Length: 333
Image 1 (cartoon, rainbow, N blue to C red):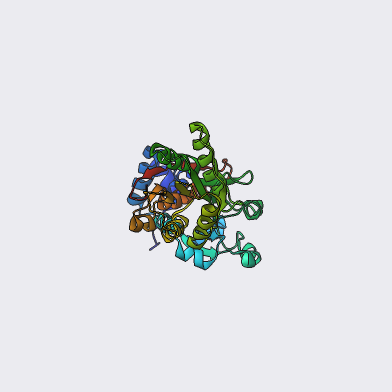
Image 2: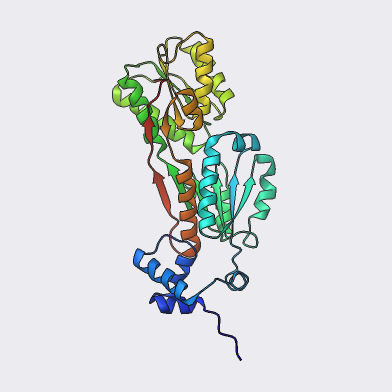
């Protein structure tokens, strides 16, 4: 007796009344599919008992079902800052739902060459990049190999590279507008690294809010997003502007460093100096820190969504997403 033929992708498409490409996009987790088509394909899969054959699909499509997440930071930063944990959590959950394997790679400068060599079509189907600096050409090099790539933070450095970002400029503007509404007029900022887009955007929001209010900005001090750098920057700001009455820090750890230095200097928070951070992380909750909320989890999920769309539709333009931010007011302002 002959064994029953295993249902194929073509069988699923025919049963659902859609094209093979649409069926493939549904199975691969791409979002660029109508709700009606998605439901029809899922119903056909259940009725036919279709199960993707990974080994066969890999031979036919040259797919590995592995997605690399490359974070251009040290282990200390990646495992010490809540933002990275949130992004990785969102990415991991979205990839698990799409039945993809996550390959996590940390890429400080001294290891960049080794990681670059690994990122080929033989190892991964796509690459997610996080925390890149402005002069990093890795996204372009990966795309030139024909591998879909999505960057966390934007805009993308070149054609074919997708990106997802939080609305950093608007978040910073909201933070400074809040301080102005509280009657603060000597508002300083502790910015992120000068060679990162996120740093530029948050400074732009700070400057834009002050300009709109006709208030002169103070010296911009840069940190590296660590608490220690926030403390160092706060000491420099106090030395230059002892009459400052508010500080907007570009992330919560730097804001925490600023609060500790202000209190050491005998300046009450928020009585003498109000402080606002960015991230709305557990650090902000524990300190009672006013902070701009961004969803790191949502950013990770959106990065996967955009990447899966590029994998399913490689001829389509790379996708982009800008996620909203909002202010959470607590005790420090």
